[in-house]
Length: 174
Image 1 (cartoon, rainbow, N blue to C red):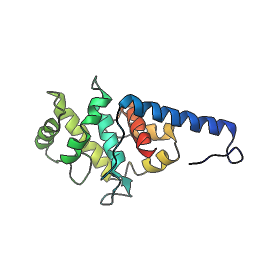
Image 2 (cartoon, rainbow, N blue to C red; image 1 turned 30 degrees about the vertical axis):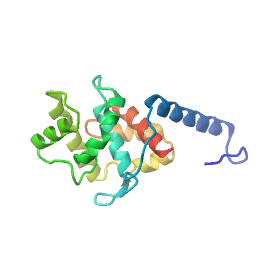
Image 3 (tube, helix red, strand yellow; image 1 turned 120 degrees about the horizontal axis):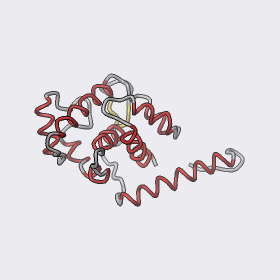
C-alpha cells in the first residue's frame, strides 16, 4: 500500500503509520513470523466467504483469557486446526469429544477445558450462521472499533479476546 500526501490527509497518514508500527511491534514481540501457507483458502461452505486464517485467529484469541498467554495459545494453532477447531464444518459437535480434542491439542486446563470447548462450538455455530461475515471488510478497512464490537457480540468473546483477535487478524492482513 503506497500513500502520497495528495491522496491522504496528515491525520490519515499518521494513523496508517501508527497502525504499521503497532503491527510490527506486535509481530516482533510475538517472535513469530506468521506462516500463512494453507491458511489463505476461504471457507465457502458457510455464509459468505471469510478467510479461514481469521477464524483461527479468533479461536486463538478466545482461548487466550483467564491468565492464559496469547503467545501460548498462538502456539496451539496448528494443533487446533488439525483437530477441527478452526472450521465450522469440522468442529466436534459432541462436547465430550470436543473437550478431549481440545486437551489433545494442548489446551488442557482441567475443568475449564470443557467450558472453552463449548465456547468454540458456539463461536463456530455463529460463524456458520454468517455472524462473522463482516469481519473481513472491517479488517481491510482497518475499522478496529467496529471489528471489536462485532467480535464482542460473538459467543464467548469479551473485550480482552476481541482486542487480541484484532491484533492477530491485523497482523495476518499485513
